[in-house]
Length: 297
Image 1: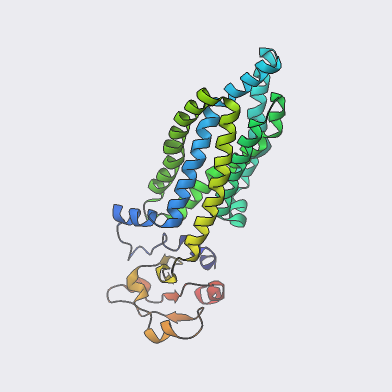
Image 2: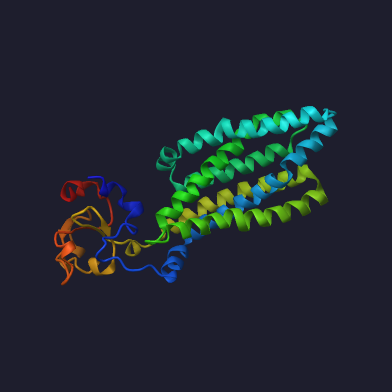
């Protein structure tokens, strides 16, 4: 049975039809106010700030470098097209095709950290350019950053969304990147670029992005470490393979089975009155659910 293998990421979204409650805006806010979720959205906004620099001044900066190096305009236009080609075909598109396997291996937190660090390193290397044609060696870094970013945003928002709010949660995460981040980045980069020049702008944004990547990894790891296990819901598998984590089902576990024994123990839950659809539901306490596959099948 495939249910137990995915319960850690989607347990709170797959709820039996008979006991599902309508999701309110308060439940959505409650899902978004946890520190790991807030840190993820903040990191998306930081990546958006760097993206605002690239979308506004990437081509402008290359043209300045080419003019200083004495390249004719025709070669500059060729270079501008090649940068997009190398970035897309070199890394971004292949990573998006493999995003499912990559996210399963790395996880959302690591994927977003790698995306932030790749974009920061890309900006730092760009700031050291003298001959603009060497930028083609750096474009795969930007491709890797965006190839990991977009799937990570969509997948993470889906994994934390309460029932019925997947699209809204994805929109909030995307707005933190494409709305808040890119908007602030465009205004900020315009000021720094006009005052200090392109090289200083890319260097300052790149160093800041690397710092944010380290901070995000550290703070998010601490938030996950100190998260109490009491907040983790019990996982209930009904006969049709659906999952329920409502508090009423957790209350059905006898006290003697909650307190003692192995964490991976499996107990039968007596159904509440009027809810026959869960008459043979099985309750798995949070933890390693691999040993429960046989019971649930």
